[in-house]
Image (cartoon, rainbow, N blue to C red):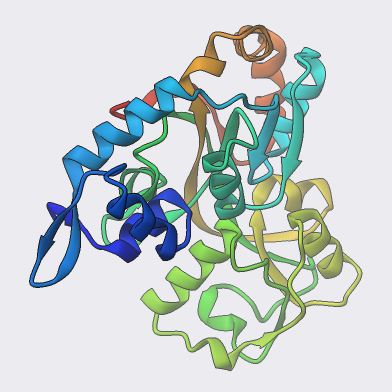
Length: 287
């Protein structure tokens, strides 16, 4: 990791325009130095500056769960009557909204090919300035969902020349699928991609209705809609939670419900789920 941030990198970190970074530097509001005529920002000083501003101007977050959809999480929020609303769009959308203060927690399942790990590399690289903690939620079986009478798709390479319904590019499932296609030397152009589905249920329904030959989804959804399933990977679905919100009544109500036998029974009913490490701390930001 570089010791200094460039103007562009700081703008991306703060989610502001580069022009605003120059204004902050010229006014002395942000730590910076000049080298060969360029502005450089010492990473350690910037992290302390962000932490100081975060504590002085605490974000008032709405009680909303963001990020990727998880059937067990959605059920737990509803059954616990914790009062948390939800806006499930995708892993990357949720992280960006969380960084902007639009919710108290976000769910994600983003695979990092360089480390062969889930979620933590992305959080450490781009979201470590958030006063939040990354905890485990569930391990889930993900693979190719097909109609039960489909005989020609038995592995990822068999997707060639088939109609496949993808998810939007920000979705964790699409990030994973793209990474595995590259890993297995499968050209994306060899697949007949349909219009992306904005939810995994919509993608599964397209397969069930015969509009698509396959999609990349959860074993639990394949079983729910009585479809065929070719396992590919066991993924880790985690939650990135605002530390202050953790101790608020809404989250504590959800957390306590998740310790109940009802949650465990529900998880046992879902095909391809493991929750034995639920709420295990994976990464705690420095703030």
